[in-house]
Length: 317
Image (cartoon, rainbow, N blue to C red; front, side, top):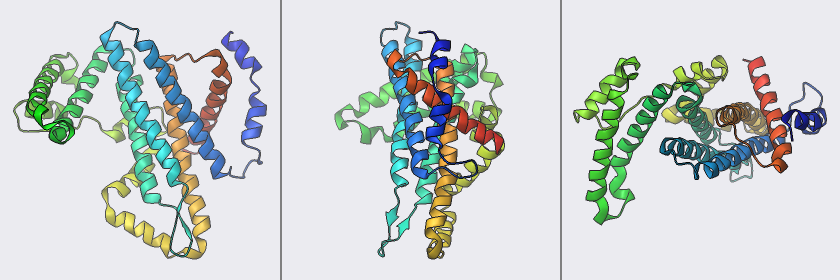
């Protein structure tokens, strides 16, 4: 079926009226927003699975590697989404009062944002520049292997430690060589270039090559809103004092817990819907995924939700 025919057969107004039955100015129920969050990320996962199936018959090792990496990032995104939705269910104190664990929720949501930004850095953010894409893939791989080396002994069997350690060191050496030979290497920030040289000299055992605030500015996400949120969510991850202070403020307002919980949940799910919507659109634009014909309705519904939430976010940026 032609795409235009599919669009003409899709009842957009009817679908949106069912999903947002309340008049303008009335916030949708949190439960319905979480259903949308689950729907968007679920279809994103299905698209990644479809990409993986197609890649299995591809003889191009580079294409398979890129698809596998894409699939892994989406898997992590979907897994954390499922766990985040569970956090929205709240916990009860000894008196039966419902508590929304905003600290945990924001730490998970922050990781969702970072997952999308890593995906963007490796794929859509490279445009059609294959050389810069390969450079960032090498940096991504090198950073991952360096972390793995630190914990290899606890991740593999004892009698394989020495063998795996030798293989990992050889892989690191090759990645450094491929990275420094890349013509775009000298276009990297000087700090990253220095880190690579220090790793090669044995002075560093880690690599930080992504500046998330810079990536937010480069991505299609609205810069002001997302940068502000990322700073807020990072405070929960980096400052136990900040997290404790926020929790204490909520605990001292027990009589308003229900209203506070709803406000905190709505503010957070709004961010999650925007990030997952942009991830879905970015993925389908890059991969041009084609699902089975019987999934057309799901695709149009999900795209409608994505466009709605992104338009709302940009309107309020």
